[in-house]
Image (tube, rainbow, N blue to C red; front, side, top):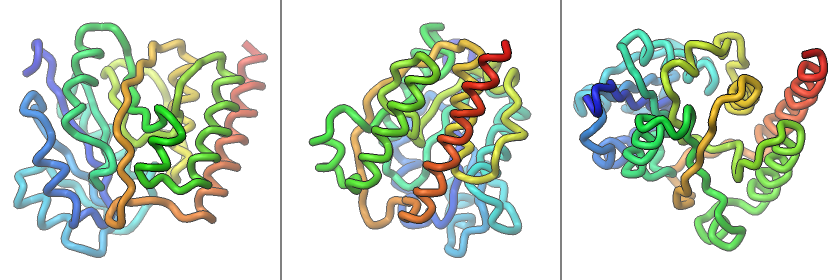
Length: 238
């Protein structure tokens, strides 16, 4: 327990065998439990996760990134987590930074923490972020900030921390099973007025790191805009 709070890290995994051990080894000791949900991997992710002593749950078939997160959050809440930190097990994000996510939430500065990869264009591109992803990230984040009145540096990070009550109070179960789940849940969070904090995380794009392709990126961008427009009209009704 960290300050009498149970800390659970969730790993939404798909074909993460090559990077899982390195990710887990860098997770700080203040974490009480690590839950990995495998979304139909074709490699040895599950067997390795068991060897590493993780709590493991497997989808029989690939259900999608959003569906994976839903299972992760349900398990973390049912296991009594007070603070839940999601990090992709592809080692694109630095797990050692989890302690700062936990501290900011535990000390009641923020309800939600985001790890932002965008500190500067130069750093993001030097870290291997494809130029089209960088441009899309900037444009979508600008759009999302404009319609919500927030000033987040990145809406599309795969490293996030949540206070338990946040996940208990919003209806993320009805969100998409696809990648746009990430945008939907943040729209829900800012719509409820929760305090969102950010800390910078280094950009690490490499061969083994997971990344959606250009076609899926276009779909994600279009869906994000669509849910942004829905957010605008739902806000006007209040």
